[in-house]
Image (cartoon, rainbow, N blue to C red; front, top):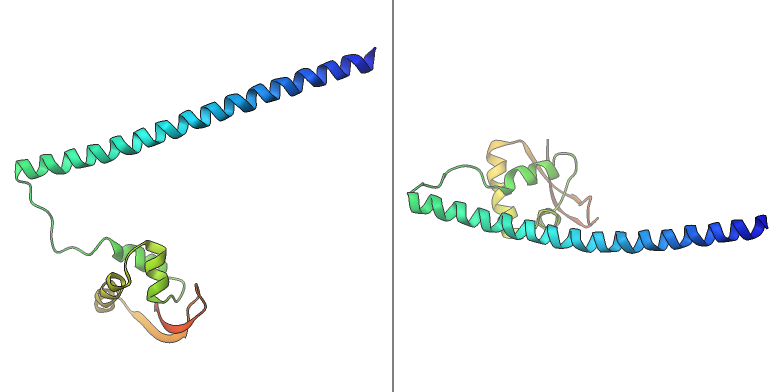
Length: 130
């Protein structure tokens, strides 16, 4: 009698777990749809803002550092990396990394050496902050 009751209780718990797992899958799918919608809304909002600024005649700020400067600086702060690995990690072309490093060399103490890159382990020219 006790064994039957425990078995029925176990079956009920397993059925409840299956229902909850299915509901979690449904909620995950709904969440993914909401995330995609939010991303699309954010992109549309940004484009509308840029367009409104252009219509109003707002000027763009020029002469500041590139957006990649702080990312590159934070990457080479602790480790010595080659330009290929720097570009791969922040998602910019190597030519842009070279230009940004040249710009950084004028303002920061940049160490350049032929050594092993700490990301890809190749013997090449690496860059790090002193």
